[in-house]
Image (cartoon, rainbow, N blue to C red; front, side, top):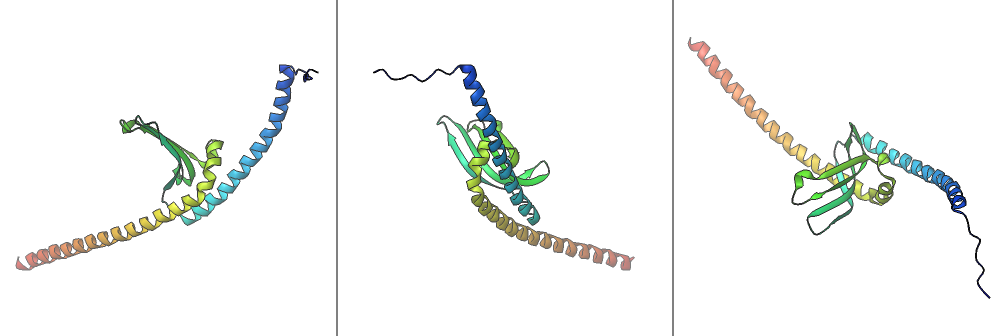
Length: 173
């Protein structure tokens, strides 16, 4: 007995059915995407309250072709268009021509969806990296402040010497 053939569905009917299903699926996708944006905005707001002003990046994925070309994707905390935010970026180039490297950055909510999905699992790593950058920046600032204070003391001493020399000259006249 021959196998029973399923009825043929016309291309028009397939497109109509697929489009209806796609319409419903897109609503779910957009809702999920909006929920992720809102969750990230909570993290952005929490980081903004800290007033860090320190950037940090964590690699999501990277590779090279063996002929000098390379690429990487990263999640970070940086300033984009005058706003500090969680961001995503792609970088790529050729080791032989570093001046023509390509970098593209987006605030998290504006990045391609597939990159946002990829990046979420690296948020804890980003916070660890941001902590390290913050601690390092604090130590450097303290060291530089000490250096500037030393320079200020040297300038004050020099000013005192100049003033005493001028005063000695005024008394001799």
